[in-house]
Image (tube, rainbow over all chains, first blue to last red; front, side):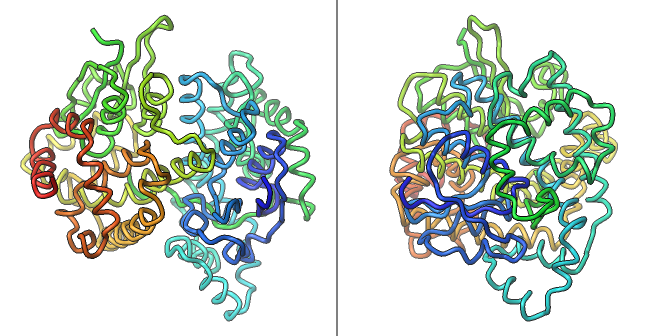
Length: 262
Length: 259
């Protein structure tokens, strides 16, 4: 991977899952930390093709620049690492098991991650954004190509919280913890049986909820034990060691939007 | 009896995705037509197959018993991997990443905007002749709360002007991005025909008539070139021959102008 660079935020959410997937793959790719809440993702240099950076459904996630192209979306970057490494065990080979894993990851990216990002940004990032002077914020906003992502940044700065979305997001986090609890009911160690991207993706989004939404995990012993198991993996430890703050689980920037239709 | 059974509506949008993938791979399947506008997808017979009540769904029988697969893009990925025939994914890892990226962009960002406009202008009005009680009873049978909310909006014309405007904005932006993409490579995301082409064609084939203000030989020469290439594929024509009614009429009308 000569010349490829992974630009990532604090190890939380998509930056955590992608950093851990990279460590699992063993690929030698340079990692550069950026401050997502300063909008640094939108001024990354070195790519001549930025559509996937500008219009990522995931919002402010990590960006891999390879062969001049900016690549995004945590699950697909993990699949890319796995395939570029010639298969490092992050995806099952069997087509049906792979379908099951992709379906799980889709539930995580469509239901869990928008909910966590919504709760997370207002709990941890609103004040810092509100304190920016108007000129700095306008410059930041002007660097964002996607109009709907820009609107999510503006809502955060203005503290425009939608009570219905908060309630819906809290419910979705609790439902997902329940889903994990049920999935592990047969005594399996990992969500899909064998360890996979599904574990990393789900763990990375649930981890910051352990403190912000502690009730969602109450009485869910299997889910909690599984989270400890994922966290103990050397790849996850290596990803967490890249933190530049004491509390990476409180590092949030606007994420995916909550499903608007369909 | 084939090992594969597909439960689908018209070859349009999501239902057509696995139909096209199966046709490209040369996989025979039993076809079960589910009339979405008659709410076949919420009848007990279908809920026994897919309790979520969403279409399409596919069953695949073998030594393992019977597998039920749902979600159109994920079904296509399964079809590509589980059966022989030409590969519908490129071999290069970065190309494969790009195929997935474009499918997600369509499934979660651009597609819902096409869908909202379609439900507002076609699906809702198609059911407007039914009494309020009848429509309420149809809604009550829907298993997923999100789908209940969506059908209610469509049946009672509850779309706001601002959300429709946002969908129109996204469609214009998405078409522009697709035009740019098809200027870089022969097909969407790579230089070979792939799942991304099937996915995106199935929501954009109608642009020449539905959005002539956005898509024309002059405005979007790359999309035009690509649409023609995909239209001409035997698997595409074979699949659309299975359709009926308004969607196939529209498809054939566009085909007539193109080929």
